[in-house]
Length: 248
Image 1 (cartoon, rainbow, N blue to C red):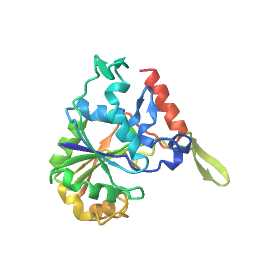
Image 2 (image 1 turned 30 degrees about the vertical axis):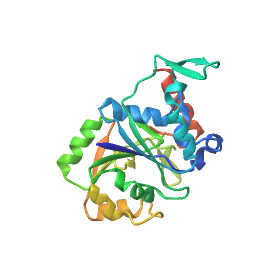
Image 3 (image 1 turned 180 degrees about the horizontal axis):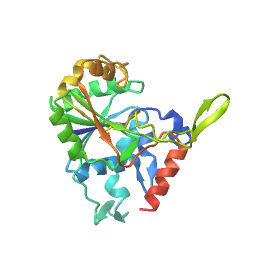
Image 4 (image 1 turned 60 degrees about the vertical axis):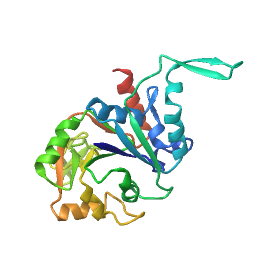
């Protein structure tokens, strides 16, 4: 199965970093976040990646073109104009990088890579979210439920303290609680080829009309992930992920 990683957005909420590089290349530790995402799938044996590019996509191409040189020791013979990679880093990855346009929306990017997916079931995720998700359990859940798509649902802690008021007095207060009845889109989708019937053009936002129609048609199942999940929306998120990585 192929793994699609959306990597074309502007990343405007973390402009401190994305003025220079695309969001998927922001480093967590010594590796960019897209590397960490790929390692999740690779751990479960999925090594065939299709990456739709947009904003500063040339830098993502450069990263993978120079990957072995960047993370291996080198012998550089300037006299003979020869470079030898010493103990080259090895990955089983097969990576297809497709320019899908600068201003194309998420649904449009997926539509543009249709021919690279061989009319088969595929994984889909964003280039800025990490989780200790069991990919095999996600896939098995999707197959069992026999829907066009499966979304991973995250029961996330609120960013704010929640208060309940009664007669002008605070009746209860909970600092950053988990709402047991509400979930957010955690990415990590599984999609059948029929998903392309819901994608109209470049301006299609995957998270709006396609997912809304799938929901209406009862074709979107929800895999609840209760383990670790963390997105990288802003600089504070990046720093949190850096701290998690640095403490193993």
